Image (cartoon, rainbow, N blue to C red; front, side):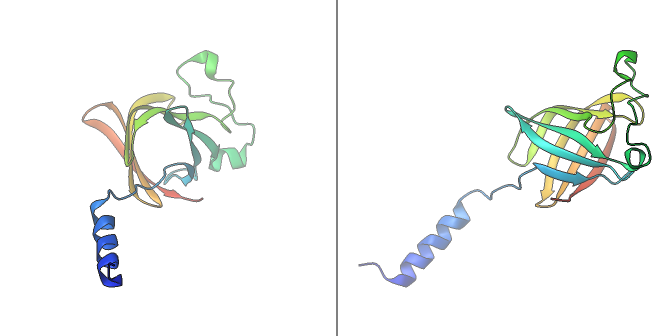
Length: 140
């Protein structure tokens, strides 16, 4: 019969040997600029994200994607606008995705890295090293 101390020690060692569970990136996130809030979800095998609200949307609820480089897309409303798409990988870093910035109408290659349970780092690049990085904070 195994002693309780042995079982506790074995359980502790097993926990240390197993990989740390990464934080789940899905949820509602606060961006550091323009009061933006983005909901990240799973879209098939990838991560995607839509704009929920921003300072601009709060002032103008029917604001449009007027800066889009594609004139055919400029009539889209900002609320619900797809901003993140095609991010694959995990459990703590997702690559190969696209980041759409409605402020300038540009689409950039992106990487999402979880830096904690309630923080992620989003990096968007025109081409490396021409990149911008933001830290987003989980709302829910």
